[in-house]
Image (cartoon, rainbow, N blue to C red):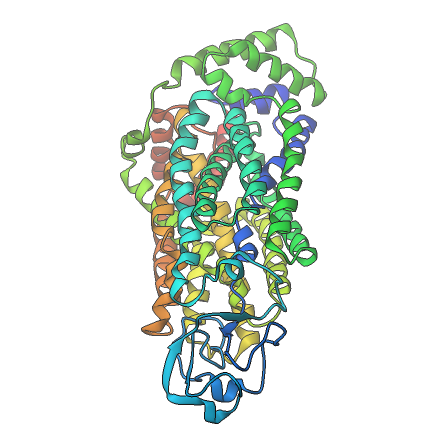
Length: 553
């Protein structure tokens, strides 16, 4: 049996092996690098955790005062506005106190005028969850609370620009180089960030962190799927995002309740990825498409050897001929405008919506994890426990149900859970936790799917840019994620409806995309266009038969 088209996937499948020991070796070696992209992402969930807080009451409080005290009943107002969307509001006003009517010699109800409120000049923080955070060090609460939201926004701005630049770096200089440039920026940003006492300098470091994260994600994802044959790509997606980094981050928080130590140990763990530079090669698919055929051939030979295949002179010649043809058919000067050519407008717009709803939902829910009732470390651990089966679910369903159905399922699951949370009473903490973690799992699945589908729909010299452009554009809308909860001050269900309804719409529209299961990665724009034409002419329900027919010819 032969294939109709001889391309890089043909080399992997028919000559050197597309899913053997060589591929597994690279995948396992790459794990420490991919995990670097997870540790710093939600570091601020804890490093900038906002604990319950209240006014320091002069005349009543001292440096040794506990967070809860009997005099709060007459010193602090109970009625106050709140932006809580996942738990009941605080018992007392966290930002105001009643005005004192006497000197500071006594502390009784007669010393306060409960008809007049004044803003806190000093705060008392509940240190039962975190002993010290950026928020408590700099008093980023109440009228300064927007500064906390800016941390997420600036990180996302960094992700935006990093996505834009990262795709160009990967397509121009290689996937491996792009990923490790990002690692070289990330590690010092994470370590040094924990010792910064100036808010605006810390903000600059978060921008640099976001920039480098996006470059690492875009290039690392593309690198991870390009040395596997089509039948194994779903496996890569399912295992590469196992939330190991988040489990480890949870463990670090458990043993480090001080934000400076948390930054330090996170950076130290990231150092484990540096030696991988010397152990993995560049993507042979990228090398072959960019005129570096000798390097690609050497890598193919190594792959064949480790996969237990002995290459004949005829096979080596065949590989060289295929690479010559790939080099000729790969457009060297593709740019982001090409995402909207060859009838790609609808496809790109649908993907942009799916990326945006996934991004906003994922970040809004994850950054709200510390606002759930209960222990913040345990809640975050449960989030990742629920995320773990997501990869296995995709592994067993992607071939049977296809990419479109699973993308639709993930988007719809996220949307339905958010809409449900909007109307569940805040006193039902157990129900809220269950629906919340399921919705968060839907958003995690959505990220896996948008990365996979986007990478499979675009050609080699546009693939990383496509992932980068979709990621970049979604970050623009995602910048609103940290501010969405503030809408609860106008109507409590509003924030979660803003998250949920667009996600459901994106899920429905995802059904219009081309099914890519079992298909070769397109090498150029024409092949990408043919992929869509092929799907339309045979019908989406015949994808499996079409894939089998290609292998039989």
